[in-house]
Picture 1 (tube, rainbow, N blue to C red):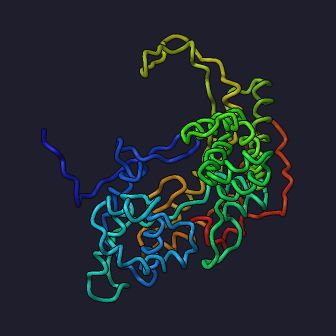
Picture 2 (tube, one colour):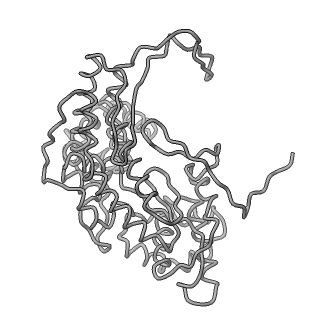
Picture 3 (cartoon, rainbow, N blue to C red):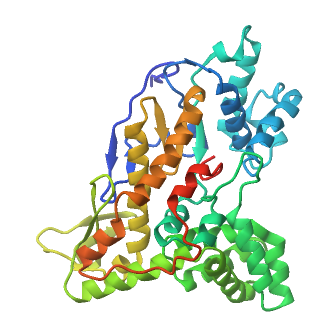
Length: 416
C-alpha cells in the first residue's frame, strides 16, 4: 500500500464547536490537539523573521518543553544558554529522555532541532526566519476563570492570576495544595505519604475537583494512585480529606462556584427545566443537557447505538447538575480563546488552554491573552445570564480580597 508523505506540505484543519463553544480540530487521530507526538508533527507553513524578541520566545518554549516551566521566565532563558553544550548534541528523542526528565519529548526535539538550525545560520538572530510553534499554557485554566468569576484572591494567587514579574517564580498550585494538605494531615503516616508523593498525588484531586468530582471520586482515585505505588490503600480516605480541605483553603473558588451552580441547576430541573442555556461574552449561546439513555440504546461490547422510535429520554438530573459548573467554565475558556483568535491578525495554533504562535508574535500573543482574559470577565455577566435562564437569583460570592480579572494584565505567568 502506498504511504502518503505530507512532509513540507500545507495541511488545513476544519474546526467545529461543541455546545459549550469549545473548538476541536477535525483531522482524525493526528492533529495539533493530540498528544505530544501529534503536536510536534505540525509547525507553521510560513517562515517569519524572529524580530527583536523571537530569540527569547524560542528559548522560553524550548525550556518549557524540556520540563523547565517551573523556573522564572528569565531563568528559563538562562537555562537554555547554560545547557547549550548538551542541547547541541541532541539527535533523537531518546537523547531527550536521557537528559531531560519530565520533557515533552517530541516537542522538545523539534524545538531543539530548530534552535540548532538557527544557530548554524550566519547573520543577526532578528533576521533569521522560523516556523516553530511556540506555545504558552494557562496555569489550571479552569481555576483561573473560577477565580475571576468568584473574586477569590487566594485562588487567583495559586493559579498565577495576580501581578508578578519575569524574575518571580510561578506558583505551582499542585505543590501549594500538597504542602497545605500535609499541614492538615490527621496523623504522621498520612502526612508522610503526602510529602513523599507531593504534587504528583495532588494533581488529580485538583483537576477533578474543577470538573465537579465528588469526595468519593477523589478518594477512589487516590486509592488507585497508592495501589500503583505499592502503598497502603487504607490511607486513601484520610489523604482524600486532607486534599479536599487543602483545596477549599487555597482554591476556594472551585467549591464556591461548583456548589452555587449545582444547587441552582438542581432546583431548576426539579421545577421542570430540561435544557440549560446561557450566553457568553462574545454572544455564543451555550447549552448543556444530559439524558439517561440506558433504556434507549443497544450495547454490544464497545459498540452502541440508539433505538428508533423511543422518543425523548429522561433527563439525567444528577449528571446535568454535577456537570453544570465545569461545562459553564469550559464555555468561558472557549470564549476567551475565540476572542484571542479573532483579535490576533497573525497565525495561531490553539489547544483549549494552550496557544501557540510564531516566535516573532509570541509576546504580542501574550499581551492579547491577558487583555482578553480581563475583558471576558468584565464586559459581560455570564453567570447572571445563566441564572436568568435557570430563573434563579445569581449567587453572591464572598469576594475574599476582591480579586479583579484586570490584575492578570500584570501577571507574568497566567499563561507562560
